[in-house]
Image (tube, rainbow, N blue to C red):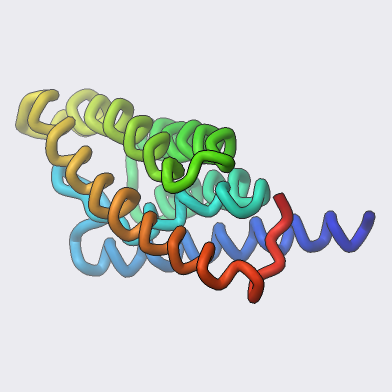
Length: 163
């Protein structure tokens, strides 16, 4: 039993660290925040398909990434909430092949534009932010996340994830 807890915490911590690191890569490219976002870390949002430890891992990773990349307090909370809701949705869809990217795309496309418009008061309309964030999420989660899912499923015998 103790080994399982240690493994769960280790998987979650590794996922959180990867999320932060990939967000820093996106931030260095100017793509981690703003009206046009392409966070490479969002590809990891499919990981709840493979382990429940990804839910807290992604949530903590998003919180730390938002906290350390200069996001507003509203974005630290709201962005983390969007990631948490997406991760929970993905975990619930773990038995539906390749549907894991849908919940994070939806949660981020609904919540993040509201933050951009009202917390950051960026110039632009809500429909514009929905479009730009939605496209970024489709690329990050939909394309990169689906590629990650396919790679992990293909090599699932090499990984010891716990469902």
